[in-house]
Length: 313
Ligand code: NDP
Image 1 (tube, rainbow, N blue to C red):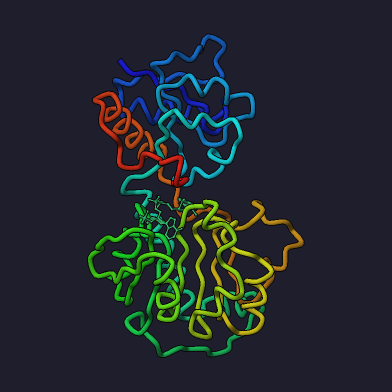
Image 2 (image 1 turned 90 degrees about the vertical axis):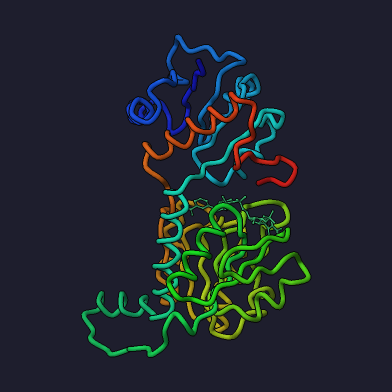
């Protein structure tokens, strides 16, 4: 019988996880990492988010590590992360659907300039700013067409946008034009009215979004960042917004998080900031996903979202 040791979210949240696993996977034994009687065995699985520095040595003993986040850059960048231990990223339908809902909201908000409505409401101003342009006229480009990106792109196509995506290796995604590799990037950007970042944070993608990069987009394009704050050079993003290169940005992820109180992003009239909330499935759905991944590992199978430590995602 598999055993899961939970360190994710600290000792206080263990009760929530325990209840979720009791409902989603009653056969799985779950223990708190922080309980004095818990001693990790080589047959144990561990569920983590951001482990404490002194957890890493013990993690090296685990059979596999499962992360409550889809992005595992913070783990892989830690000098003591045990890369030899299988690492499974968070996934599942609800995680992807939440992301698709968020990006749809952000894209429609950019399309209709909803940021101006929010500012005007704050100032009790009734100023007409109707925009006669529909989703069908807008080309959305999704950078990163993995578990989340492919789902989001398909969803946006169903909503009625014209959708393209950019990734490293060839693939086909229904109703989505796929651009592959560095050579295809200029054409992908040149035909994108709203750019969505859903890349993982890796040495190749950190700092990718600069002023020069954004210059490849049609003037007045929108930008949605739901990947990681590190993908974006923030001063360049502000320059792109202030010079009209971009019409607006919706940022769910920033650097650092939380965004410092004095950041110019907070009050920027073309920026909407949300506190890294785009996609976090319920504890029950995460427990269900984790239990399925453990079942696969127990059968000797590879879960779909097994991280490749060499590519970093
Ligand atoms: P996946 O690993 O499934 O997908 C990553 C995609 O990015 C793949 O299509 C991959 O291409 C592509 N990619 C990676 N590197 C490059 C590169 N150098 N050039 C072009 N394409 C590249 O990740 P997920 O979809 O599960 O998650 C994506 C990210 O979303 C996470 O890493 C995390 O940072 C972020 N996230 C944010 C959340 C939020 O609430 N804001 C919640 C969850 C995740 P290929 O398929 O060809 O290898």
